[in-house]
Amino acid sequence: MRAPRYSDWDTEIFSDAVIDQPHTMYTRLREATPLSRIGESGFHLVSHWDLIEEVLNREEDFSANLTGVLYEANEGQPGAFELPGAEQGAASVIATADDPRHAVHRSLIQPRFTGRIAAMEAPIREWAREALQSWFSAGGGDVIPAAERLPARVVAHLLGLPEEDLDHFRRWSMLGGDLLAGQITGDGLLNLAAETDNMRQYLARHLDLALQSPRRGRKEPLLHLLACGMQDDIISREEALGITTVLFGAGGESTAALIGSCFKWLSQDQQLADHLREHSDDIPRFVEEITRLEPPFKFHYRAVRTNCKLAGFTLQPGDRLLLSWAAANRDPQRFEQPEKLSLKRKYLKQHMAYGRGLHFCIGAVLARLEGRIMVEEILSGTRLLKLSDDQTPVYTRSIFIRRLERLSLDFQ
Image 1: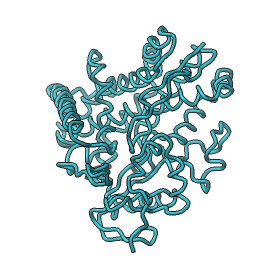
Image 2: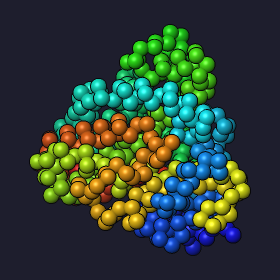
Image 3: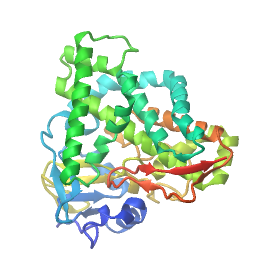
Image 4: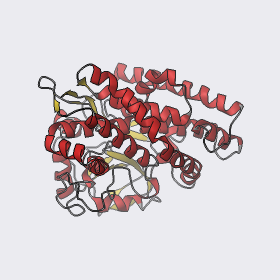
């Protein structure tokens, strides 16, 4: 038996109403149809915590490889955009790889990545102040450029890319989200493909430079770590380039999305902002709750490998799942008053915004650090923070990422 449709309106997931406020749809699906198919596209939404955990524990049935994405086809119906060469590159590295290669990639990257985070607080704070300085100097306005600038700079620094190319990094860090946005059509697709090729050529050049004289010290940039992995035959060049692309995109856009959500929430709750100014020890708890309530990535994909069942419904190879972190993070069976931001919530980090299990995000610690520092800096520089009266916050038109592309704020 096939799963029920997620909606009487097959394109609901692409609608402006759901892009701007998706949680009504998530609640309906979680309560009524926790596994539901999106028209005849072959994609299924998984909207319940327990069901998502089951999928994550059944890698033999469900692959993390990113083989295709949901998009609104030209005729207005949901369809599958098949990714060319999906078995290579960014489709099967780190978060999108299965074991045993996933374990190889993670064991190579994670110790060096996490080991460098603690030492980065001072430079990240300096870069955060620089990112916000033009916004403060202008007397407010759109704060999203500052939210995007910091994560792009941090990831580029970790990789070992030249700082003078920062303007490219900010733009390129959004490309992965653009591909997954569900709006892949016509000229936009051609421009996206061209820009993605420019980014990959740029990253490939710097990876090859690192390969010419790879440095093995613990504090060396990640490009040198990847070059050493290639030299030692641990990973291929294509895998190294794919890992670089994933780190560059995921670390930039997702953290920018988190920072923007934090700023928006603060501007709408002056009492909370005042509390955090007086009790800065609560800022990490605030950032964690925003991460739960507004996860930067609304879902991640899984590809069905076998003829199998989930929640009593049949699936077959070629079907795909959307694991809805955003729905699971507001599951009342897991969280008391899940729609409420609570600084006193127990087990704050036990949410799904950073994934779960074997594919838990290696950049979670870094995202938390950047979010905390940016919140500290904007609160310390203001007495009052509010939405500009004449400017409505604008979310990027994406089914995949929950990211503000414009947020105009006034301050005193």
